[in-house]
Image (cartoon, rainbow, N blue to C red; front, side, top):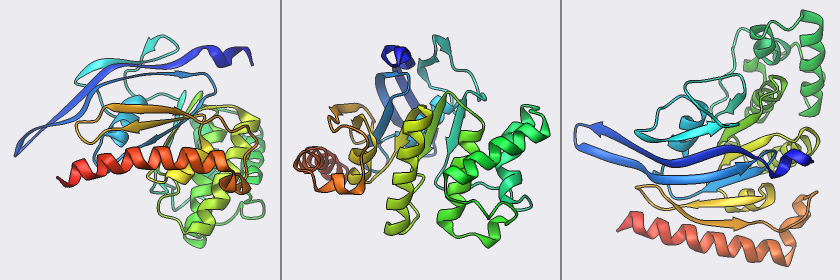
Length: 262
């Protein structure tokens, strides 16, 4: 695709500090990164390294202390429909059915009801929830709730999809299944994806590039290109190149974990 070589998101020397009762905490210390259109980026690093802070700045939920984030050359100021967010918590409306939850962002965009329902049903099917359109969140498992959240994010048709450990609270089997479904959807829909995870296996199976963050204050320690062709399946995890990349990334992350423990 022609747009794939264009910079979609530009993170330019982003610095973020918080003032608390115990003084100043530096969460991000000069983070710069160019993300291309339709690129799948995964971010890994020890707890507290600023991964979620960076995602929330891109989402417009936080402001950087200094530096800028631009989308298509425009500085991000606040939230916007061009950025969809999926959090680890499911964040569904308990009084709305699966169908109505997925339709919600389309209603906000004033998409005609019949069209909105058709779009919602398409993405509900794409995440394997066909037949559950009339179910309420309390009737769903954790994995099913997260499928609804992902379907809702895709239905809104954002240009950038921001995912903050969306599978972190799920059991291993459900996690693997949702990784596969997310990859299939991304290969068809081609969104720019910024995905935070603590799971190195997950980062290598999903991403085109893995960004390794240092211990706080967060900086980009290393960027690893994942030169494994798509489509990728769970069988890819037995590939020697997969194992090599996983080892390289894990060793870097573990070094930063040891820094946190000092």
